[in-house]
Length: 285
Length: 261
Image 1 (cartoon, rainbow over the protein chains, first blue to last red):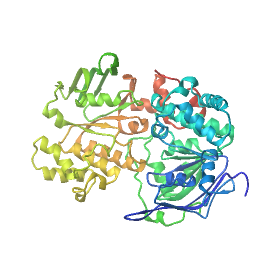
Image 2: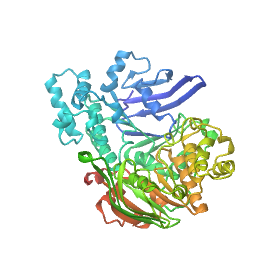
Image 3: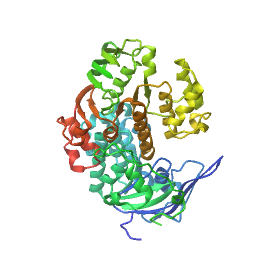
Image 4: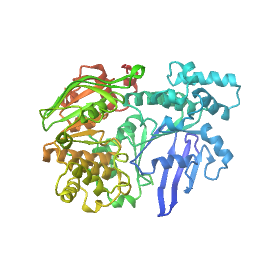
């Protein structure tokens, strides 16, 4: 395989066995990730988060993951041991979750949580770890790292909480970051400032990013390439700059139904769902 | 139709006092939609709740509020409660989980001692685009967009003149948001309703409203027409920054962002 590809996903399936029958959360998703910002966009229930979780082996109990190929830098993640997966999670691929309130440990100080992330993957002294943590907090544009180091998650704002998450995910120096709606709970200006921090770090370190979001405008302006998911499938893949010229009726529907600042007050075009979208193969397959 | 002068809302006592709304004034003509825009904690929802009269028990509210020539007292009149209705943000939290749609919709009609409750319920469902089969379902059996339609139907039951909309679509997918916004626009046209719309989404406000106020830290920063918003002719740096931010990710613009406190 070429070394420019960090992650290869081929024909990924995630199914859940529920009392009401088999639910196909992801059916046949394929993509490759290089050193780039890849956006996955879709509405609720489209399988975008399930795709991100399946890559890290974090599918909830009751779910089955299958794929023709799921490889991270040559490591097959499908039949990897739990021991290998623990190395990959955090060290190779790490994940930024939506809500810092629920994803940070409420009874540990911010500093010790970030240090823990580093110490699990690297053998360093406590003193070095502490220095690196300060450095990382400064890198995510936190002004008083000494104060924040000693703070508990409930003592910081949402925007700062998400910066702390980014610091924690970045410190073991992973190759890929999966960000699942990382800024949806934040105000617009704070959201953009947090994304700028993430963007700069990814560019400096040459990482790959999978950015999962429902926000079409945000993905189009932030990412390089976009996958549009509908009902567990990728219906279209396009470069972010070409979203306005997207071909698939679902993508077009999504783009058109957004109210626009410079638009009028006419009736918004409503998305008409076509059952054939569920059966015709998507653009990437 | 709606006139608010010098509204102040203060929560808490002594050292824990929090001044949530400071000297807010606004007025809305009949048949117009007015937007309240701001980031979280700016006080936009508190203004709406103060107008609805649901803050009296938890906060000190002062200022003069008039709705259709009626000066609002601490205890709102029965007719005010019939004429002014509210739709909340979260369609999961605002419908009683163990009441059927029918019970949810007939309760306001019973409270206001209206006649022909059954016809009203069926008619309200029809108006929001749900067929009669939804009448005996529970909230967990219907989708988020359908729940928000039920919330709108509940607001319509009493035949209101004013509907207060608190982030009515921010919990919905964009395709569902378009349907609900279209519904709200149609109902406004057909019933001559007056709306106050609270939202953090400038595009939604530009789509729905004629004019808006931008709020920050409890105070109104700027009041302008949507036309002025579209032409970016705002004079206040805070509004300009919100506008820039709502256009999407732009690495260079972000460096110029200021803290407004």
